[in-house]
Image (tube, rainbow, N blue to C red; front, side):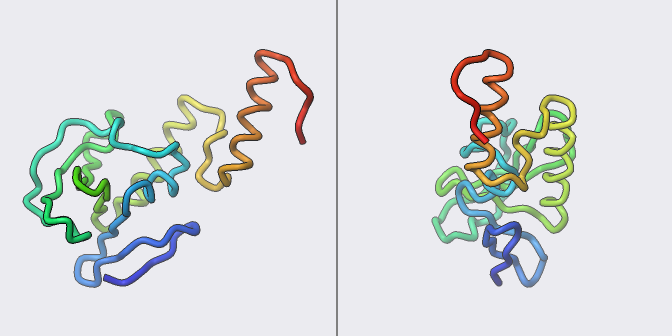
Length: 136
């Protein structure tokens, strides 16, 4: 494995298959999610692949979203890491952008750092529910 930095997050890339290993919460950081993505995963099946982190667990193949039955990621229940086959990270980004288009206003864009994201949320809440002074 070699290290690969993507949007400020360092992932491990397999030199043989091109897949990416994201340690616990790294995929969430890349996608602009709030942390533990396990709650969004569907049913899991044993993939028979060993966990690349060395935790002695096998990875579980699981659907990333109910909106796309074809995007299957390999998740480690022991350490919380996720293995993405070559090209799957791009699919995750595209799917998340689609979800934001359908259900959100872009507040959780993966290019928005956490602090700016929180300020956007505060302004959004104030716009709909009023109260408090405006923050710039």
